[in-house]
Image (tube, rainbow, N blue to C red; front, side, top):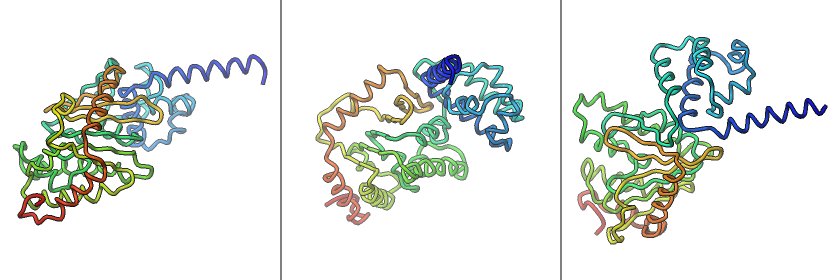
Length: 304
């Protein structure tokens, strides 16, 4: 390889590395929207790159959120895919949104499960940490528990709630995929005492926790009622780790979910989970507690 060719190759590699360093949740969400538009259009990546006059690596970096792309090129991409107006509008908002380290996504009250951002992040995570002070974590819920808790605030026809129940159940497949994330869940003991859907539903939920506590990729620990009070125990939270991207924390409000990438915010969430881990029961003790609840008849409502 000549000196000129080597220098040119090095410059291209450097630009690619810099492009990768700029990856954010917004860019990955944008790339995922574009990829889905391409798939719906029936194009392979190579075919669409040829039609656009781009290299295949350029298209890949764009679809994986590893490079910023001028707005004109994004709409050129969508034009080739003949994307519908709804897709174009979603993508336009993503292109024009600023990266601030805090990404807000609205959803139906208490129903974040259909958020494409959440689904995308969970599917790519190598590790997931979660804490719930009042309810069982969504990724651990039985279908009946999920339906019962959603129905408590649902004011529409019961049939229209089912897609949200199905979305929550579909999210749980991330724990059983090939190479699943290492998932650690902290449940406050209060969540085990709050009755959701009746004693039979709670009995089945305890059975599920007892079963999942034995999965090699899942750790479930209980924060006992006797744990010292701490601000870290006040609010639910999740922290996701990735092989090729910076960690992302996210927390639900009643009508929106905020995704946090800001390094200072991530440090706070890491400290939060360290504080929770310090007061939680051990893995074996927590597993025994679930088994104790699961082996108790539903009519009793809990361990003897």
